[in-house]
Length: 314
Image (cartoon, rainbow, N blue to C red; front, side, top):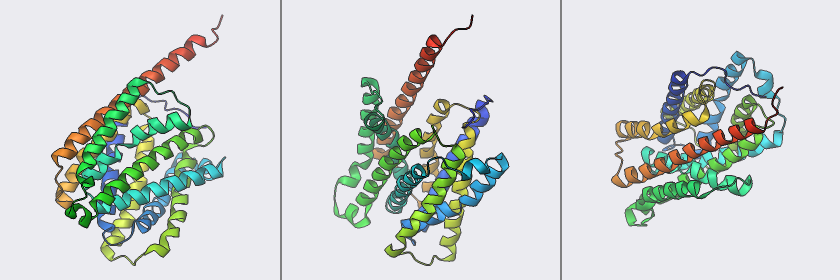
Protein backbone atom coordinates (compact mmCIF):
# COMPACT_ATOMS: atom_id res chain seq x y z
CA UNK A 1 0.00 0.00 0.00
CA UNK A 2 1.01 3.64 -0.34
CA UNK A 3 3.31 5.14 2.20
CA UNK A 4 2.25 8.45 3.72
CA UNK A 5 4.40 11.43 2.92
CA UNK A 6 7.37 11.61 5.25
CA UNK A 7 8.43 15.20 4.58
CA UNK A 8 6.37 18.15 5.73
CA UNK A 9 7.43 20.81 3.25
CA UNK A 10 4.38 23.02 2.76
CA UNK A 11 6.15 25.46 0.44
CA UNK A 12 7.08 22.72 -2.01
CA UNK A 13 3.66 21.09 -1.70
CA UNK A 14 1.83 24.34 -2.50
CA UNK A 15 4.17 25.11 -5.41
CA UNK A 16 3.57 21.68 -6.90
CA UNK A 17 -0.19 21.96 -6.44
CA UNK A 18 -0.41 25.44 -7.97
CA UNK A 19 1.74 24.38 -10.93
CA UNK A 20 -0.49 21.34 -11.45
CA UNK A 21 -3.65 23.47 -11.34
CA UNK A 22 -2.15 25.91 -13.85
CA UNK A 23 -1.17 23.08 -16.20
CA UNK A 24 -4.66 21.57 -15.96
CA UNK A 25 -6.07 24.94 -17.02
CA UNK A 26 -3.60 25.09 -19.91
CA UNK A 27 -4.76 21.61 -20.89
CA UNK A 28 -8.38 22.76 -20.74
CA UNK A 29 -7.57 25.72 -22.98
CA UNK A 30 -5.92 23.40 -25.52
CA UNK A 31 -8.96 21.10 -25.46
CA UNK A 32 -11.36 24.05 -25.80
CA UNK A 33 -9.60 25.18 -28.97
CA UNK A 34 -9.22 21.67 -30.41
CA UNK A 35 -12.87 20.70 -29.83
CA UNK A 36 -13.94 23.45 -32.18
CA UNK A 37 -12.80 20.94 -34.81
CA UNK A 38 -12.81 17.46 -33.25
CA UNK A 39 -15.58 15.83 -31.16
CA UNK A 40 -15.18 15.46 -27.37
CA UNK A 41 -14.74 11.68 -27.50
CA UNK A 42 -11.78 12.04 -29.83
CA UNK A 43 -10.28 14.66 -27.51
CA UNK A 44 -10.60 12.20 -24.61
CA UNK A 45 -8.65 9.64 -26.65
CA UNK A 46 -5.70 11.97 -27.22
CA UNK A 47 -5.82 13.37 -23.66
CA UNK A 48 -5.64 9.86 -22.21
CA UNK A 49 -3.33 8.16 -24.72
CA UNK A 50 -0.51 10.69 -24.58
CA UNK A 51 -0.65 10.83 -20.78
CA UNK A 52 0.28 7.12 -20.61
CA UNK A 53 4.00 7.44 -21.56
CA UNK A 54 4.41 10.36 -19.15
CA UNK A 55 2.84 8.35 -16.32
CA UNK A 56 4.84 5.26 -17.30
CA UNK A 57 8.14 7.18 -17.08
CA UNK A 58 7.07 8.58 -13.73
CA UNK A 59 6.28 5.11 -12.36
CA UNK A 60 9.59 3.78 -13.66
CA UNK A 61 11.48 6.64 -12.03
CA UNK A 62 9.71 5.94 -8.72
CA UNK A 63 10.29 2.19 -9.01
CA UNK A 64 6.51 1.55 -9.01
CA UNK A 65 6.05 -0.15 -12.39
CA UNK A 66 4.95 -3.38 -10.71
CA UNK A 67 2.44 -1.59 -8.47
CA UNK A 68 1.10 0.33 -11.46
CA UNK A 69 0.66 -2.68 -13.72
CA UNK A 70 -0.74 -5.23 -11.28
CA UNK A 71 -4.22 -4.26 -10.00
CA UNK A 72 -5.94 -6.05 -7.14
CA UNK A 73 -9.43 -5.13 -8.32
CA UNK A 74 -9.54 -4.91 -12.12
CA UNK A 75 -13.30 -4.31 -12.29
CA UNK A 76 -12.92 -1.42 -9.86
CA UNK A 77 -10.49 0.21 -12.30
CA UNK A 78 -12.86 -0.38 -15.20
CA UNK A 79 -15.75 1.26 -13.35
CA UNK A 80 -13.48 4.16 -12.41
CA UNK A 81 -12.52 4.45 -16.08
CA UNK A 82 -16.16 4.48 -17.20
CA UNK A 83 -17.10 7.21 -14.72
CA UNK A 84 -13.96 9.24 -15.37
CA UNK A 85 -14.06 8.97 -19.17
CA UNK A 86 -17.75 9.95 -19.17
CA UNK A 87 -16.93 12.98 -17.01
CA UNK A 88 -14.18 13.98 -19.46
CA UNK A 89 -16.52 13.70 -22.45
CA UNK A 90 -19.06 15.97 -20.74
CA UNK A 91 -16.35 18.39 -19.60
CA UNK A 92 -14.85 18.69 -23.06
CA UNK A 93 -18.30 19.05 -24.60
CA UNK A 94 -19.08 21.86 -22.17
CA UNK A 95 -15.77 23.61 -22.79
CA UNK A 96 -16.63 23.86 -26.46
CA UNK A 97 -19.85 25.75 -25.72
CA UNK A 98 -19.16 28.03 -22.73
CA UNK A 99 -16.28 30.16 -21.53
CA UNK A 100 -13.31 28.69 -19.68
CA UNK A 101 -13.94 30.65 -16.43
CA UNK A 102 -17.63 29.74 -16.49
CA UNK A 103 -16.90 26.04 -16.99
CA UNK A 104 -14.36 26.20 -14.15
CA UNK A 105 -16.84 27.86 -11.78
CA UNK A 106 -19.60 25.34 -12.51
CA UNK A 107 -17.07 22.53 -12.01
CA UNK A 108 -16.66 23.67 -8.41
CA UNK A 109 -19.94 21.87 -7.72
CA UNK A 110 -17.96 18.62 -7.48
CA UNK A 111 -17.17 18.80 -3.72
CA UNK A 112 -20.83 19.68 -3.02
CA UNK A 113 -21.99 16.59 -4.89
CA UNK A 114 -19.27 14.53 -3.18
CA UNK A 115 -20.69 15.31 0.26
CA UNK A 116 -24.18 14.28 -0.87
CA UNK A 117 -23.00 11.08 -2.57
CA UNK A 118 -20.81 10.14 0.41
CA UNK A 119 -23.91 10.26 2.60
CA UNK A 120 -25.91 8.16 0.12
CA UNK A 121 -23.34 5.51 -0.87
CA UNK A 122 -20.82 5.47 1.99
CA UNK A 123 -23.24 6.14 4.83
CA UNK A 124 -21.26 9.17 6.03
CA UNK A 125 -23.12 11.33 8.53
CA UNK A 126 -23.70 14.83 7.21
CA UNK A 127 -24.78 17.37 9.80
CA UNK A 128 -26.27 20.82 9.44
CA UNK A 129 -22.91 22.61 9.04
CA UNK A 130 -21.86 20.68 5.94
CA UNK A 131 -25.40 20.68 4.57
CA UNK A 132 -25.45 24.47 4.87
CA UNK A 133 -22.09 24.70 3.09
CA UNK A 134 -23.39 22.43 0.32
CA UNK A 135 -26.51 24.59 -0.01
CA UNK A 136 -24.40 27.75 -0.23
CA UNK A 137 -22.20 26.21 -2.91
CA UNK A 138 -25.10 24.92 -4.98
CA UNK A 139 -26.77 28.34 -4.76
CA UNK A 140 -23.58 29.80 -6.21
CA UNK A 141 -23.63 27.24 -9.04
CA UNK A 142 -27.22 28.17 -9.88
CA UNK A 143 -26.27 31.87 -9.97
CA UNK A 144 -23.46 31.08 -12.41
CA UNK A 145 -25.79 28.97 -14.55
CA UNK A 146 -28.81 31.31 -14.38
CA UNK A 147 -28.01 33.27 -17.56
CA UNK A 148 -27.63 29.96 -19.41
CA UNK A 149 -31.04 28.72 -18.26
CA UNK A 150 -32.99 31.71 -19.55
CA UNK A 151 -33.71 29.90 -22.84
CA UNK A 152 -33.48 33.11 -24.85
CA UNK A 153 -32.73 32.90 -28.57
CA UNK A 154 -29.05 33.84 -28.29
CA UNK A 155 -28.35 31.29 -25.54
CA UNK A 156 -30.09 28.50 -27.45
CA UNK A 157 -28.36 29.42 -30.72
CA UNK A 158 -24.86 29.29 -29.23
CA UNK A 159 -25.57 26.08 -27.30
CA UNK A 160 -24.54 27.72 -24.04
CA UNK A 161 -27.45 26.14 -22.14
CA UNK A 162 -26.34 22.68 -23.22
CA UNK A 163 -22.73 23.55 -22.37
CA UNK A 164 -23.65 24.57 -18.82
CA UNK A 165 -25.73 21.41 -18.31
CA UNK A 166 -22.94 19.19 -19.66
CA UNK A 167 -20.44 20.85 -17.31
CA UNK A 168 -22.73 20.37 -14.31
CA UNK A 169 -23.22 16.72 -15.28
CA UNK A 170 -19.45 16.32 -15.46
CA UNK A 171 -19.15 17.75 -11.92
CA UNK A 172 -21.62 15.14 -10.68
CA UNK A 173 -19.71 12.32 -12.39
CA UNK A 174 -16.40 13.55 -10.95
CA UNK A 175 -17.99 13.43 -7.49
CA UNK A 176 -18.99 9.82 -8.21
CA UNK A 177 -15.38 9.13 -9.22
CA UNK A 178 -14.13 10.56 -5.93
CA UNK A 179 -16.51 8.35 -3.96
CA UNK A 180 -15.40 5.32 -5.96
CA UNK A 181 -11.71 6.13 -5.49
CA UNK A 182 -12.26 6.51 -1.74
CA UNK A 183 -13.28 2.85 -1.73
CA UNK A 184 -10.53 1.76 -4.13
CA UNK A 185 -7.63 3.16 -2.11
CA UNK A 186 -8.22 0.53 0.57
CA UNK A 187 -6.98 -2.17 -1.84
CA UNK A 188 -5.32 -0.37 -4.76
CA UNK A 189 -1.99 1.44 -5.04
CA UNK A 190 -2.15 5.04 -6.27
CA UNK A 191 0.16 4.09 -9.16
CA UNK A 192 -2.38 1.54 -10.40
CA UNK A 193 -5.29 3.97 -10.06
CA UNK A 194 -3.45 6.63 -12.08
CA UNK A 195 -2.17 4.25 -14.78
CA UNK A 196 -5.34 2.23 -15.31
CA UNK A 197 -7.51 5.31 -15.53
CA UNK A 198 -5.54 6.58 -18.52
CA UNK A 199 -5.53 3.11 -20.07
CA UNK A 200 -9.27 2.47 -19.65
CA UNK A 201 -10.21 6.02 -20.70
CA UNK A 202 -8.14 5.61 -23.89
CA UNK A 203 -9.84 2.30 -24.67
CA UNK A 204 -13.36 3.48 -23.85
CA UNK A 205 -12.96 6.64 -25.92
CA UNK A 206 -12.60 4.48 -29.03
CA UNK A 207 -16.30 3.64 -28.67
CA UNK A 208 -17.03 7.21 -29.78
CA UNK A 209 -15.51 6.68 -33.25
CA UNK A 210 -18.94 6.11 -34.89
CA UNK A 211 -20.07 9.51 -33.54
CA UNK A 212 -18.02 11.62 -35.92
CA UNK A 213 -14.26 11.43 -35.44
CA UNK A 214 -12.41 13.59 -37.95
CA UNK A 215 -8.85 13.80 -39.25
CA UNK A 216 -7.51 16.76 -37.23
CA UNK A 217 -5.60 19.61 -38.80
CA UNK A 218 -1.95 20.04 -37.86
CA UNK A 219 -2.82 22.76 -35.34
CA UNK A 220 -5.52 20.66 -33.64
CA UNK A 221 -3.26 17.59 -33.62
CA UNK A 222 -0.52 19.55 -31.84
CA UNK A 223 -3.06 20.86 -29.32
CA UNK A 224 -4.49 17.38 -28.66
CA UNK A 225 -1.10 15.75 -28.20
CA UNK A 226 0.01 18.69 -26.05
CA UNK A 227 -3.11 18.34 -23.90
CA UNK A 228 -2.29 14.70 -23.24
CA UNK A 229 1.33 15.39 -22.33
CA UNK A 230 0.51 18.45 -20.20
CA UNK A 231 -2.35 16.60 -18.49
CA UNK A 232 -0.03 13.70 -17.67
CA UNK A 233 2.57 16.02 -16.13
CA UNK A 234 -0.15 17.85 -14.16
CA UNK A 235 -1.48 14.55 -12.84
CA UNK A 236 2.01 13.63 -11.63
CA UNK A 237 2.58 17.02 -9.99
CA UNK A 238 -0.70 16.99 -8.09
CA UNK A 239 0.02 13.44 -6.86
CA UNK A 240 3.55 14.43 -5.86
CA UNK A 241 2.28 17.47 -3.94
CA UNK A 242 0.62 15.16 -1.39
CA UNK A 243 4.04 13.71 -0.51
CA UNK A 244 4.97 17.05 1.04
CA UNK A 245 1.68 18.35 2.44
CA UNK A 246 -1.64 17.12 3.79
CA UNK A 247 -4.65 16.97 1.48
CA UNK A 248 -6.66 19.26 3.79
CA UNK A 249 -3.95 21.93 3.54
CA UNK A 250 -3.72 21.72 -0.26
CA UNK A 251 -7.43 21.43 -1.12
CA UNK A 252 -8.21 25.19 -1.06
CA UNK A 253 -5.57 25.81 -3.73
CA UNK A 254 -7.81 24.04 -6.24
CA UNK A 255 -9.78 27.29 -6.38
CA UNK A 256 -6.80 29.08 -7.89
CA UNK A 257 -7.99 27.47 -11.13
CA UNK A 258 -10.57 30.27 -11.49
CA UNK A 259 -7.78 32.87 -11.53
CA UNK A 260 -5.82 30.91 -14.11
CA UNK A 261 -8.96 30.24 -16.16
CA UNK A 262 -9.86 33.93 -16.17
CA UNK A 263 -6.37 34.94 -17.32
CA UNK A 264 -6.18 32.27 -20.05
CA UNK A 265 -9.76 32.91 -21.11
CA UNK A 266 -9.16 36.63 -21.46
CA UNK A 267 -5.91 36.43 -23.42
CA UNK A 268 -6.66 33.36 -25.54
CA UNK A 269 -10.42 33.58 -26.16
CA UNK A 270 -11.31 37.20 -25.27
CA UNK A 271 -13.57 35.91 -22.48
CA UNK A 272 -14.43 38.27 -19.64
CA UNK A 273 -15.98 36.98 -16.38
CA UNK A 274 -19.49 38.36 -15.81
CA UNK A 275 -20.81 39.75 -12.51
CA UNK A 276 -23.12 36.71 -12.21
CA UNK A 277 -20.18 34.38 -12.65
CA UNK A 278 -18.01 36.18 -10.10
CA UNK A 279 -20.80 36.34 -7.49
CA UNK A 280 -21.76 32.71 -7.99
CA UNK A 281 -18.16 31.54 -8.01
CA UNK A 282 -17.53 33.42 -4.77
CA UNK A 283 -20.40 31.57 -3.07
CA UNK A 284 -19.24 28.23 -4.47
CA UNK A 285 -15.68 28.82 -3.24
CA UNK A 286 -17.00 29.87 0.18
CA UNK A 287 -19.09 26.70 0.42
CA UNK A 288 -16.16 24.57 -0.71
CA UNK A 289 -13.73 26.10 1.77
CA UNK A 290 -16.24 25.55 4.59
CA UNK A 291 -16.55 21.89 3.59
CA UNK A 292 -12.76 21.53 3.49
CA UNK A 293 -12.45 23.18 6.91
CA UNK A 294 -15.13 20.92 8.37
CA UNK A 295 -13.55 17.79 6.86
CA UNK A 296 -10.25 18.79 8.44
CA UNK A 297 -11.91 19.28 11.83
CA UNK A 298 -13.61 15.90 11.57
CA UNK A 299 -10.31 14.29 10.63
CA UNK A 300 -8.63 15.84 13.68
CA UNK A 301 -11.49 14.67 15.91
CA UNK A 302 -11.23 11.11 14.55
CA UNK A 303 -7.47 11.11 15.12
CA UNK A 304 -7.95 12.27 18.72
CA UNK A 305 -10.60 9.59 19.26
CA UNK A 306 -8.29 6.85 17.94
CA UNK A 307 -5.46 8.12 20.12
CA UNK A 308 -7.69 8.13 23.19
CA UNK A 309 -8.92 4.58 22.64
CA UNK A 310 -5.58 3.10 21.53
CA UNK A 311 -3.92 0.66 23.97
CA UNK A 312 -1.43 2.48 26.17
CA UNK A 313 2.04 1.03 26.85
CA UNK A 314 2.98 0.21 30.43
